[in-house]
Image 1: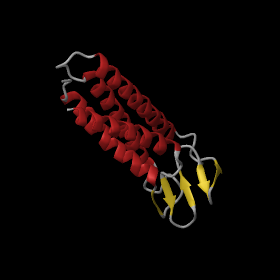
Image 2: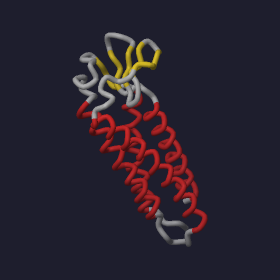
Image 3: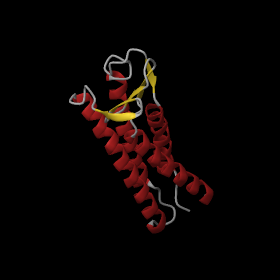
Image 4: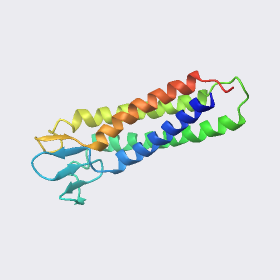
Length: 160
């Protein structure tokens, strides 16, 4: 049981770190023609990330930014609650609060990435017709899977 809890804790920390990286890094979509990448915050050309996004004022992008920030907040809160519950909760109880908070994080990731996929990942919204997904986009989907698994495991596990 201790090994399982330690493993979940490590995966949860890795998920938080990957969420930070995927939200901060500007490599959500990469152009095939030029050395250009687009993120949630800036447009990077040739390693220079000073360019503002041409669609920075669109509500869809602001929603994606908000949901990704919320997912980071809920993931960190879930981690803190898990550690708190680990040391204060009575034996036999389940980690309901940690699991529920992590599932809210999962929901925020799902909404944010779905909006981004619908509006910008196809190439029409980001002005790069020949493009592919960057590592930030892929990391976010990995975090989506991890946060769901962690949330469900928190709901199922009991403290022994």
